[in-house]
Image (cartoon, rainbow, N blue to C red):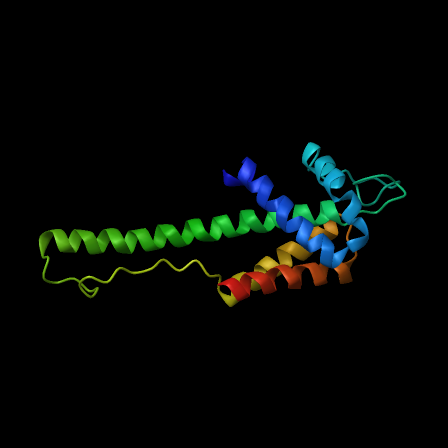
Length: 161
């Protein structure tokens, strides 16, 4: 799956750095090291001594929580795109079959190709926001900061859809 590729890691790193600059600018000097630690062990290590599960017990880092939330979001979006692609391809295949047997009776205008829609619905955006917030909090981010992160990410997605 794409989520386990170098390209996914690169996108996660780039977007994480942008979000850290907005959410936790105090971590900018450590962001590369924190992300390296996260990638070395992406599972949350929950313990009573270190409730965040990342970094030292003294430093509570937002960077790994942001990376976790992004990877959860990417998985969600990939699943939504996959479902959408399956539905769209079924319609396209049906249209092509009709064209094979009766080329004059197609429901799409001649010469016009339908563009695939990759934007998320309002419901999907809300679900993405909840997933991001939940994952950020699981990574140790405080609820208010996790909500801020979720709103920033979903806002960016909504503006580009």
